[in-house]
Length: 214
Length: 214
DNA sequence: GTCTATAGAGAGATAGAC
DNA sequence: GTCTATCTCTCTATAGAC
View 1 (spheres, protein in one colour):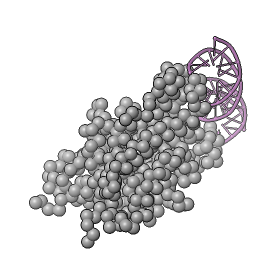
View 2 (cartoon, rainbow over the protein chains, first blue to last red):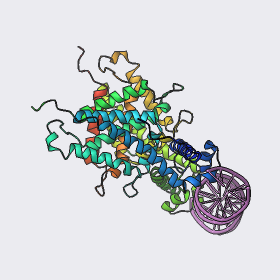
View 3 (cartoon, rainbow over the protein chains, first blue to last red):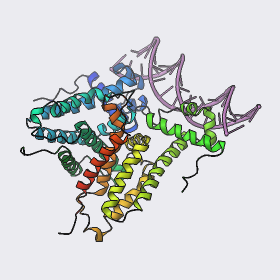
View 4 (cartoon, helix red, strand yellow):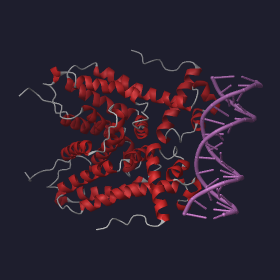
């Protein structure tokens, strides 16, 4: 099965290149500190050309978020559709999440920034994309009395999801800075796999899966 | 015993007010998006007066970080000095950490931003303050073969510390945004205590404390 | 589609009066 | 100590040529 067709026309290629450069720079420096000039330079065009594709800086930023979070959403729903058992679904979700962040570490920094910026009044754009997950979690755990025999919910699942998400993005973004080792890369299997195992242990413990009814 | 004397002269009071306003605004909006004008307005002075106390914006920001992280450092070392047993020391550290973030939630957002900004090349200022903790952790866990009978280290403790820190700051900053409930405040005991319990469970599991040698 | 040129706002830093 | 006034730079956005 073909991937969602890559860029073919020149226009599509330029647009993709702008998005990719913007993703890197917004993740690394944040919205306010990133200059359109830097994005243009990385693509090899002039600043004014960007507005042919994105009407302003804000719209470009939102397109980046949409791309990154949309990709995550797609990966998660695809994997979840392959499992019926609730325990399996939970583990699959954690696994896909960690792998996705490992394969696209810009997401880690973008999420850290979005969370830091969000307030109760000014809600983050991010919510538009994470809301489906919240609903999914709530539906699975809360609205299914028939599943209460499978999983004993000891804590708020949204709470658990927040802990898993926070631990992952913080780890991926902070580790290169915390370890002295030159060229340390947390997105390699060598580091991603143990992280995944630890998070799975945590999630299993917090959402204590019961084997059979007592 | 008296607290470290509060501001007495007018100058000291103004300086403290600037620091406090800057802490709030830098945490909420980030360095680049915060205007000196807004800080001054909140204090009730003019922008130019700030430079009488802090030579430029960067220096003010670093003073804020120093204040917040210095307070944490002080709270942690004070509490750690009260425990001898390693298991107790670990739990005390987690407890103090969660309480401190709960009592000064600006730290959560400031840390999220620092981590998002740090790269392997451009190291975060934060490291200057967290390095002592890293050394402490390494000294406790790594350089004490005599303690190997007390704690069996299954994973890198720095790794664990990163997960705990990430989960905490993400949770505190993200929850008001994730729950619809108006006026939700994650810094109340009602929410801080369960978080602490969950993190303690996680840390106990990850650093599996052995009761008695087998 | 991409460019050059320019307008215009915003914000930090500095000088000097009070 | 705090203010007013101003300088200067940066960056976004827009207009219009090619």
